[in-house]
Amino acid sequence: MCHKASVPGKIILLGEHAVVYGRPALAVPVTQVHADVQVSNSAREGIWFDAPDVDLHAELKTLPSDHPLAAVVHNLFFILRIDPFPSLNIRIDSTIPVASGLGSGAAVSVALIRALSAYTGHSLSDEQVNDLAFEIEKLHHGTPSGIDNTVITYARPIYFVKGQPSESFKVGEPFFIIIGDTGIIAPTKESVGDVRKLWLEDKDKWEKVFGRIGEIVSRARFMIERGKTKELGGLMDQNHALLQEMTVSSPELDKLVEAARKAGALGAKLSGGGRGGNMIALAEPATTEIVAKALTESGAKRAIITKVE
Image (cartoon, rainbow, N blue to C red; front, side, top):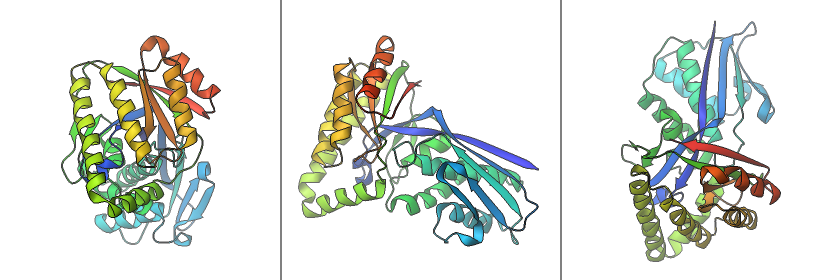
């Protein structure tokens, strides 16, 4: 018996970091990258993980209890009241770069929850999957917004405010985003922690900055829903400037943002935790390849063109 699950990656269009402080963010799925999980019977005793992309080959009992993969199994089987645990082989393959802002951790969690629940014959709603994945995100990020697991679970564009039901929104006219990967691994937990220190030192100042980001996000949703996607470029540029002020950009990210703009992008910004990982650029269909080439020539390890619709 074998059960599989595949889920997309995600990018945050606008609103990262401020989303932790109650402001809205926009995020969309990226189907060009995905996490795949396959669960099958094992002849060996125990639950065995095989995740070649991160060089992990281990049995469940050898992993610490706070390891995200172990936590998925223990939490899910506790909720489903499965005891004793079955003997399983769990194969994890992912084309989503780790710690790059594309939601690799959340994607693996969501895919694993879906594959395991299907294997055990329990059908979980998207809401249940999302809630479980959010608990695992806390192990990855400390104080996550919940945006990664939500976009990946529902696989559609999301307007997200922490602690509120997420809203999917319509894209009035499809548009193209180019994702430029710096190749620098940058754990979100660190940049989120540093922004928190800044906020604790001067709450009035940073609440104003977060408020400006929230306004940018609300305007962007309005433009996207009405198909006025060209207006999105300027809003992305404004958001990036505020993220720079927040100290979460980096010379590598700024270099790629500038290269994209010079190549004809309508706007560009970092995406996700920052300090490395990815940046994104908005481009018209005729210039997507030009912008992608400019990014790789400026040091991006890869450039992914994705259509948002």
